[in-house]
Image (cartoon, rainbow, N blue to C red; front, side, top):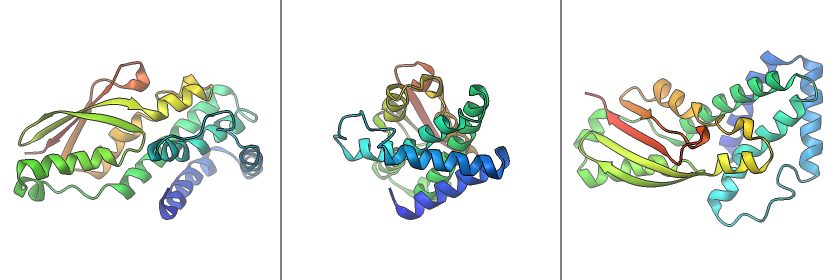
Length: 205
């Protein structure tokens, strides 16, 4: 992971945590996370990564898993889950805001069809957890099927299926907050049990 991005994500997570836990609890949580990392968690019993996307997905989700486990030592499970979900959302927005440039309607409309399709495929490529297919493209609408989400795979294999949809909300929040000239929608989510996520981008009129 890019080192600057890594720092930005940690700052976003810290901002959430300092509102949710007191200083003593924060130190306790951070120490427990560090001890777990030294033991090789949360990937100690996982096979070696096969691809760069596998590695990047583990880098994205690893701290969230360790944070959740540490929080459960000081808070009720539902409360720990709520805090971790908020950390994941804020971290996702930070990540995408760093990786994806501001999308300008005027610039998109000046592109040819192939260049515009390539631009939106480039956006999906910013998601290291996703394998995808472009299923529809026209002058103002581009639809992708996300056929695999590594984050969902990893969180289930790590033993926390209750968090399998925790990574879904950040995408929509990011596009609504940070990309005002594009409409993002999604009806189905792998994290909610669907076979695929159906990402759709529309250029606003």
